[in-house]
Image (cartoon, rainbow, N blue to C red; front, side, top):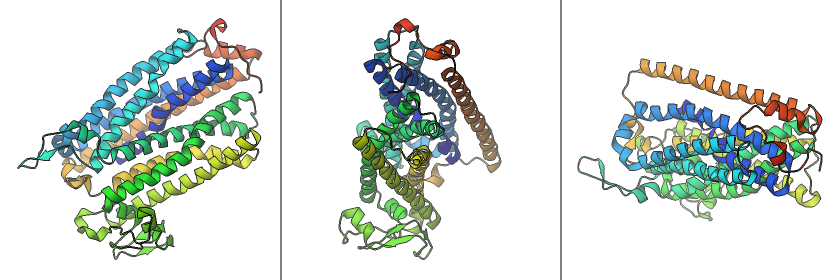
Length: 462
């Protein structure tokens, strides 16, 4: 499950956010009569469709694993939090239909009609994220039910089960995170092109729009991250203690940047900042922070699990802080000179920002899941009670099959992207006025409209 989640989540930022970024570029192209922007939007829509197809494979494996690997959880709690998965399923089918309309509409619909029919696509993607995050938030702060004499949930309140205390902080933190991740990854592709000397308007525009979106959202995400950490402090104090390596309940608690927790409660390595943890949690040094020893050892993460959650959290904070600096660098140059920063180091950092964001997405889920241990449903069901009792040999066989499927899926994804990129480069380096683009892309579903229906514009420099 850890392998499949860690692999699938790499596709999530593009499934949720790439439609919105594509439509922003599409809107710019129609609004300004910009053929370059329309070309970028058309090509991004092809990437979006391929990514969605691969997501079908990885997501389907996950859906089977819920039933095969967690029968105790699904059998007991499925009626309570299963609504989130139902919402995600409806969103999935709706998104598939909308992607098909948008992709094939490039050659079959009028320009503005095509754009307006694509506009619901980001909403469907957000609805899918709504369902998944609602289910996960319920696992962290389960609500909306009562337990009968045999310990089974009854009297399910759908509204309370969906809108749990952690849902709001988790959802907005997740949505903003995946949008800025997609923005940095897409911009990073064009940053590499700019570093290689491709300074044409195509690469500059392909970099500027997604990077601007990501740069605007980066400080917002930093604030949301602080907010969700404080929500965990109030609603999941033991998880907070794990992510901050707090052993005993106390005030004036120091903050450890990285470091390792030991069985006696000591922390080795890392950087210790006196009183900072209490200040961050409650805005004053006298804030009391609950420690891991406030609950029995069987009800809290192990020292290894706490260290893993702590490192994942600190990596998120470190990368987020660096991205804020990168966004400020970009914003200063744009406001002062109305152009991209001239330093090659900026483009190098921008090229790495996407990979760094994908790392933080992984770390976010590690923090959420490992910090909650040993509970799969916080304070209601342990992982040991939820997991399948299947013998080890079939599980290892299943794991091997899943690894093979995922390697083939991601290999196919990368192969298709490389071939599309090669096709586009040949088109861009071919005959003047985009003739090669028409020849090379005209036979694809997302191919260009006849020239009479496209917006006016050129591929020249600004």
